[in-house]
Image (cartoon, rainbow, N blue to C red; front, side, top):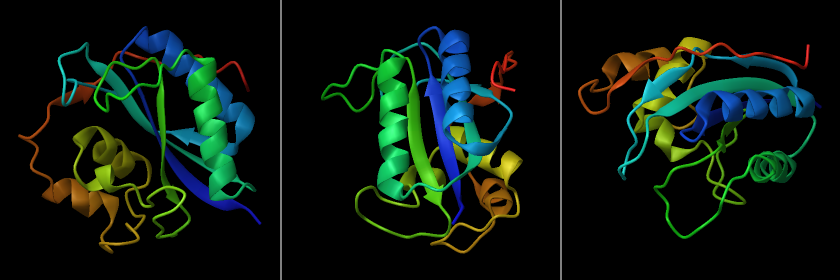
Amino acid sequence: MSHFILISVGSNIDKSKNTDAGLNALAKAFSDVEISPVYESESVGFDGDTFFNLVVSAQTELDVDGVCSILKCIEDENGRIRGSQKFASRTLDLDLLTYDELVIQQPVILPREEILYNAFVLRPLADLVPTHIHPVVKKTYQSLWQDYDKQKQNLWLADYLWSNTET
């Protein structure tokens, strides 16, 4: 059975190169990959270079564990350094946001809580799947973005175009 997944993608180290590599790897691992516009945003929680952020939708036959394993592997292949710091610069950050309408606490929290708090996640979600409904708060991503306090975080369209080598 095929499952609909949403994944956030972020990078603030060699952003274009690592975003391309991440998207190409996602396109290999999953089917029907579509991407939101790419936004640039200030780093949150630490002083660092600006981030590229976007959301990817895809289909997969894998379970949640399998998807998370692939995301971690893609991050590692692209130089992700794992440390104790939650807020730090990243070559590539891939987070499973939703898996169908599943609401779980293990092996990861789904839907991912940052959907409701970070403009760099919510805005691309509202662009990519505006009429999809958040599984917990039962509102569309478009309405969640409309209600979001846009003064909390600055983000703007990035000067980036995916050089998709997988199609």
